Image (cartoon, rainbow, N blue to C red; front, side, top):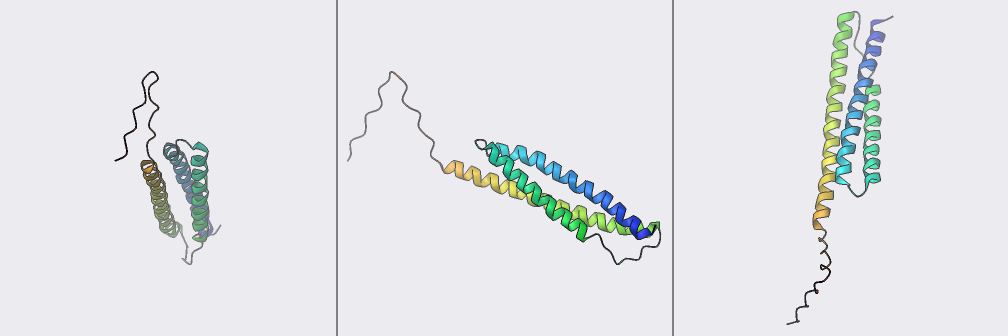
Length: 140
């Protein structure tokens, strides 16, 4: 087998599981985070989480497959490792940037939800039974 084919196989064997690991981590912790933000809307939290994870998979695996090819000359094991180090390192950096991007999206959703919740007036509890309601103030 040609060394470049070995490099491609190793590249896919490393980057696809790495992508899955990052996506599962985002899914697990993102779900918990979004469920906390959307306390009253658990189905919405799960849906938003799933949509973000699917988008992450599509972009990540698209990048992994587009970045598969190389014009490098791969003649021996050293060339295989050098090519892999550049490719896997680049994929890891891109996945890291995408992870940070997802965290920022989660944080933006959280902030928007908290700001919206803070803007809503707090309902007043009904008067305690047995006590009369306060008299309305006369108009000036």
